[in-house]
Length: 306
Image (tube, rainbow, N blue to C red; front, side):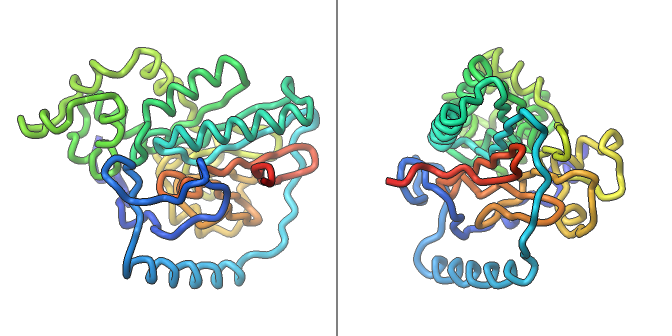
C-alpha cells in the first residue's frame, strides 16, 4: 500500500487547535500534558486560536441558514456518535446521555447507535474505548464504522507501514494504552507489529476487522470521512469513505442522502443542507457530540442542566 495514498493530507497541520462547543467530559477543560495525551495551546497561541474562533464563526454565518432535515424512518431512533480518539471518559458520558434519552422515550427496542469511526489514536485510552464499544454491543444495537485511524492501525499490524508513520498520527498513545513498553522498544530500534499484536486482545482484532465502511438507512447515510460527489454509494472506494476531505467538504450539491460524518474537526456540529459534521475534536476538547435522528428530524443530545 502506498504511504502517500494511505496518509493523504491527514497530518497534524489539518487538525484545529480551537475549542469546540458542547458538553465537557468530567467537567474538565482540555489541557496539554504528557499523561493526559491531549495536545492543546497555551500562551500566545491561545490568542491566535481565539482569533481563529472569531474568523471561523463569522465565516459560518455567511454560509449557514436554517436547514430542515428529513424525518428519520418511522419507528426508529438513531444516535450518531462523533470521532472518539481514545477518550473513553467522553464515550462513557455519551453512553449515559443516550441511556437517559432512550429510557425517557421508552425506546430501547427502536434505538440504534452508529459510531462514526476513529476510536483509536491521539487520546490516552484507545484500548478502553474499544473495550467499551465491545461491551456496548452486548446491551444495545450498534453499528460501528471504520475510520482512517483504524485503517492505519490495521496496516501497522499487518506490517504494511512503519511505526514512525503511525506515530505521527497518534499511534504512540494507542500502543501505550495497550501497555506496550514503547520507550524501551524505541531505544532498541523501533516498535514492530508483533510488539503490539502480542498485547491486543483477540476480541479487539475481531472488532476492528468487523467495522463497516458505510451505513445507510432511510434518507441518511453514515460514513467516517464523506462521499465522492457523483459516485453511487455502492461504487465509493474504501479510501474515499475513510479519507476524503476537500472534494466532499466543498461540494454544495445533493448526495442523494443527508450525509452524517466526522473526520474533519469543527468547533461545533456543522449543519449544512447536504451533510452534518459531528466531529467536535473530543481528544483535544473533551467534547464528544451525539446526534439524534428520529421521525421528527434531527437534534443534538445535550446533558441535563445542573
